[in-house]
Image 1 (cartoon, rainbow, N blue to C red):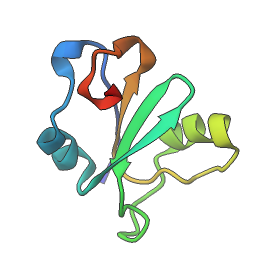
Image 2: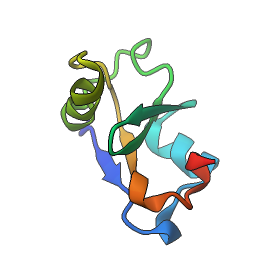
Image 3: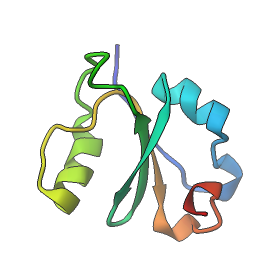
Image 4: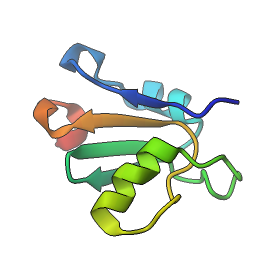
Length: 87
């Protein structure tokens, strides 16, 4: 299985909760990083999902912990403040 990081570039692609859950494969947890937010599987580690290297790098830059984001993730940049995920 290939681990993906989906980057939202346009508000028309803003994922609904159902779409986000389908992409990450579980309950959605929102993680703030300096340049935006990551939507990840809340139980990804319990499910032994593989490390998402790029998303983990974004997290590490902000918080110092490495290899902590696992599974598919969705990235929404701060430039899309009109996203439902920022409210």
